[in-house]
Image 1 (cartoon, rainbow, N blue to C red):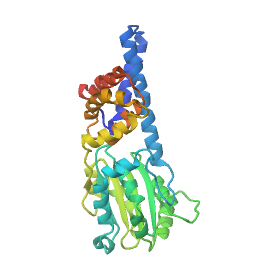
Image 2 (cartoon, rainbow, N blue to C red; image 1 turned 30 degrees about the horizontal axis):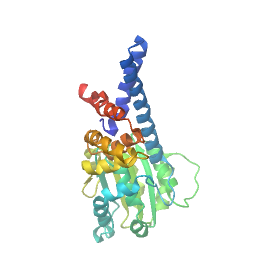
Image 3 (cartoon, rainbow, N blue to C red; image 1 turned 90 degrees about the horizontal axis):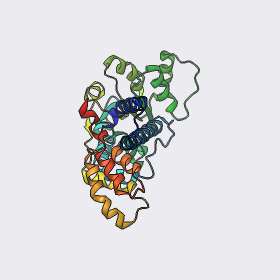
Image 4 (spheres, rainbow, N blue to C red; image 1 turned 45 degrees about the horizontal axis):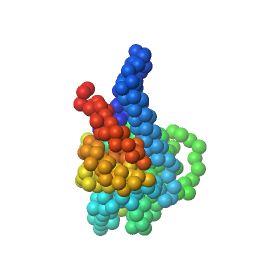
Length: 312
């Protein structure tokens, strides 16, 4: 299964296949059914990606971003060890007495759960009690200094209103808002590899009080190396059994126990294709939700979409 950061590219491949098939007016029944299934899968993947991006970009509140109610408990249970290690660092005397704002990158491949882990940490009461306020900004691949600076400023609780949109004025306002305050900021999904751009963005953040912390999630260790003041935290893929738990939680909704027993061996093989990515497990489980037809499950298991990246 293509990992999350490659799914947009995969969708382009799917659309190319579909467009070519329609232009040639392929009529064979078997091919038509495969194309229909492929088209449905493409739409479902696109919907999941749009939902994921919309959730990440939703304006933050004082409470910050929330994890999905349907899976947050399970994901939290898998990531308890990771969560506790990072929170232990956040609450450590070493960070509390640091003479500059600390930056801790969480590094991992797309879909492995970096954003979810950051949400869990962000919403932990111990973290909330440690800082004057918490901020959350989704950066994504469009690293615009003005837009990001403005987003950080607007995330500050009870921030003063401002009319200007120039970088200089926004940085001045942000510096005033953060001056002497111990803040916790999550910069989610960082792609910037230019140290000069990071230095410019970071300038007003240095006004924060001793013990302020920034967590940056990224897929790229090079990006992390530009930003970090502490070692990067590398987030590994889930074990197959954990992926299975998440997948089955979604896939087996409203399915009879007898049907589950027949579908589980197929589902176990599907899970192996998720390569430890919780988002992939959740997505596939959602695609098969309440589906009791073994043939549909086998078609998913054998679908050529798994091989698209290997054929490039």
